[in-house]
Amino acid sequence: MKTIILIGALGKMGQAALTGLSNHKVITAGRSGDVDHIVDITEEQSIRALYEKVGHFDAVVNTVGLCEYANFTEMTEAQWMSTVMSKLMGQINLVRIGQKYIVDGGSFTLISGILNVKPIPYAIADATTSGAIDTFVKCVAFEMPRNTRINVVNPTVLIEAWGVYGEMMPGFEPVPGKLVGKAFERSVDGFITGKVLYVDA
Figure 1 (cartoon, rainbow, N blue to C red):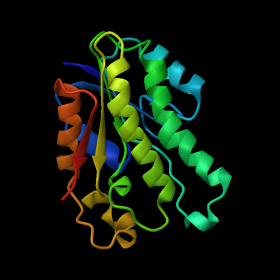
Figure 2: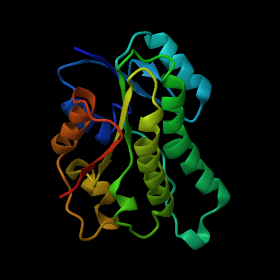
Figure 3: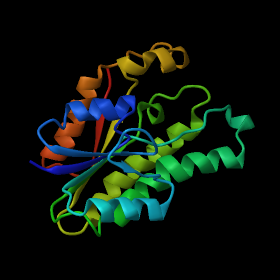
């Protein structure tokens, strides 16, 4: 049994990840709500405090990353930066800071999203940062210390979230959260590293 920090546990994607982590001790974290620890991934000190409070852990699974949605011609720098600081730098900092705390041979699993492969209107910031995270994981795997592994789950829209996002994604086939959970399970319990785990219909 591994000790896993799951960030974003209360969200739809976090609940999907939980279905694949049932064999482990899961410590939940998020910006608010009924979680074990409060954390804001856009704040370095908040990330560091989370790791210090938890102490020993074998894996970090992140399922959050705030994205701003707007037409490219209307996107402000502030909207770009809020997306970059959350979905991109927030996740990079989870790894950059976490590498000093995680056990030898531990693993990080990040989140991107299918929109960098199948773009839709108004989602340029999401697509750009998802592509950057996919590239970060593929490249940084060669530099991770102490046999630490890193992967990223790149899912399409969840059935459980179709009511929110379906109108934005005509022609997309949603997938059940349990299927996405299998990708998180493969990342945490397998031996792969530097992989983008696509989950699409």
